[in-house]
Amino acid sequence: MPDLTGMQREDLADALLSAGVPKPLVARRATRIRTWVYRRGMTSFETMTGLPASLRSQLAGRLTIGRPAISRRLVSRDGTRKYLIRLADGQEIETVFIPDENRGTLCVSSQVGCTLTCPFCHTGTQRLVRNLSAAEIVGQVLAARDDLDDWEDPHNRSGRRITNLVLMGMGEPLLNPDAVVQAMRIVRDDEGIGLSRRRITLSTSGIVPGIQRAGREIGCMLAVSLHATTDALRDHLVPINRKYPIAELLDACRAYPRLSNAERILFEYVMLKDLNDSTEDAHRLVRLIDGIPAKINLIPFNPWPGSPYQCSGPDRIDRFARIVNDAGYSSPVRTPRGPDIMAACGQLRTKSLHPKAPVVTKRTANRVPGQ
Ligand code: SAH
Ligand code: SF4
Image (cartoon, rainbow, N blue to C red; front, top):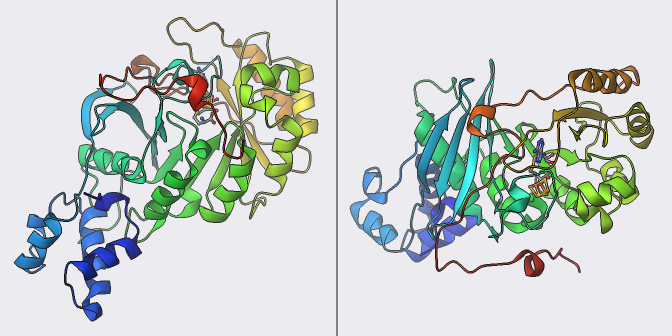
């Protein structure tokens, strides 16, 4: 049965029509159902007592209202929550909630594992890979709202805990663009999760054809995992660079819709000791992004069991930040959140458990659209 949580309004309207709802009532019914599901957290048609009983049972026979299960929840000393989320086929992903003083950010996954193999990233070492559906992407937000008791109180519309969403969990969102675009339409929709496009940030390792599409079809803020300033090093650290080298990637960034000082691109740069943290690197970085409204997010490398790298020392990071800053770019250093529960950037990885799940090996899965 189709899952309502991943459906667009038009699809729900069609389903209502075929369940016998008279045409003039379809729009109103669709709005109410979506509000109940996405803003009040209802998980079954039976509880929708505002609908005629016959329609409720019709719908229950045609649609599910999916909710992935939180199979484990870890809460960090700093308040960060990491959820291990079990999908209907038994595969698992991770979702992280990061509370801050005046906002709460949910970091969602777009794939089980990742087909790309950036050697400093734990997710990249995971063998099982599949795309998430739109319902599974939206489902992470719904599951987190359950856990955080973040449902709308009709008498008090402020005080939401999840105020921002970042596509920075497991997977490369632009290698699963259809589901990501569908899910973000629901996240943005006022009848859906209701976050404005500027509160959504998509991070990509640099899938050039997907960048324009994200800008056009989601309109979100863009984060780009740059991590190196020469193709030789980036070919190694972010291997998709061999297909989309730095110059092409930066051209795609320059062409990003609505790029302006108010909507700058965030370049992510992981600080790896003696690899990419020299003063030459910092100066080269500044030259590369010349003319692009940008912020640079320096991410101290977060280790994981068996990881082959070390984080740059604080002096190196400071020196790097100062050069970038002096060139006029804001260069905040990202504080690792939830490192005690392995929730920080690049530490997410699950053992996909379902014995019957089709195994997609890296070799077959590591294809890019258009190849
Ligand atoms: N696949 C996407 C989004 C997920 S990763 C991408 O690569 O952009 C979110 C960010 O964490 C990326 O910038 C990624 O390169 C970075 N990252 C991965 N492993 C890391 C680690 N061990 N320490 C610090 N940052 C890491
Ligand atoms: Fe995939 Fe991003 Fe990790 Fe690279 S850094 S392996 S693209 S999740």
